[in-house]
Length: 514
Figure 1: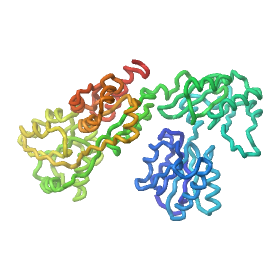
Figure 2: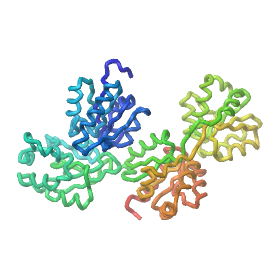
Figure 3: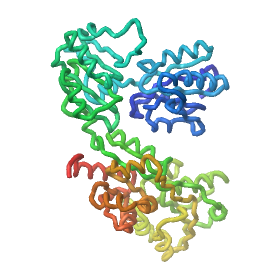
Figure 4: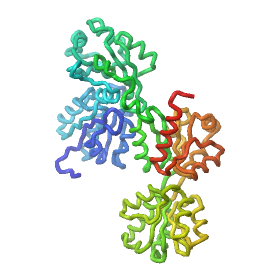
């Protein structure tokens, strides 16, 4: 994207929480940002869309109490813009709906700094959609009003007219009103709103953590307290609420509200995390290992210099494909592969090859493991020369078994290193007993994580409070090395297979059952 006449400052809506509801335009400007000033309620997941080198600053960390922070926000925007930096002011929901976007835009105009406002999905629209509540309905409701439940105390004119709101012929949606809920309800009832009016409160709308209650207006505060709902949340009042089904489409998602730990390296977790979010889960990411380039490329380069001597090239992971091919392409192009045949351990590895326009000659159809590949390859490689591109550590089954029938040379095209952060929020959630399912996508990942388990965590696994889900039999065997039970093994050794195993396990034991 060019910078021809584009502004340097973007007041961007982050949406209500679900990353899928953030607009494409917001993602585009985040990818160019030098500075991201984000609200406290913006999910950290959205910051992954920012340019890797961007400075990310939560406005919560600026000096002063809530009203005192805004001059500091303005100053940081102006300072960075004058330095020629791209600034994204990332705001929850929509910048112009109770988001102070108007004040920030005015500040930029007064300073003569060009800007762009990027709309976002506001919380009212998300809450209505994810709860199946039509804010308007041709047969019942033809108007909707968005209301703040927290007006400025010093505001002297244009204050909310509670008499008019009580008579409003449509749906009322109150933002930031939970702290003043008894006052809001009292005002509406005092001015004639029917105590039987259907109402609801929802917190964490659009996320797997979403919780809500529905009741009549007169009982709203008591029901809220009994349910333990707290700010921030949204209040919806009106006949529209009566159309809410017992369970919305989102609440019927197979993993709604289930907490799942993803232990893959961070750069490989995005697809799985997004799939889990769409399924209604509450995913946490705790990378157990990290992928690095080899400390010494000499063995790989030596093998590349002799590629013409090999009959077969075997990959045991997508990481292996990436590491090998990046090194190969840094020295030439794919023509160096010549007549060599290629084998992949499973569908994910095969997909990585196809992404480079290389169709593997052999991929096991059922058993996606070293054993499955050995069984399938045995006759084809007999008496041949084989190059095995793999990690610096891993199971030795494949090279040992292949060596019985052919000449094998192994090279480490990437390295796996333990990277478990026991001080992270994800690990803290695990310690607090908030995680239900742990997905383990390799034996090395399993070993790295489980070595950190103390007696408390082991006890949770043994009682079944935490379920260990393995991607393959090989990974399951690594789990059992720690004398821990494997709750399920994916029938297909892939990320999709791992998620399917979690879904099947969740269906077998619905949330809240023993």
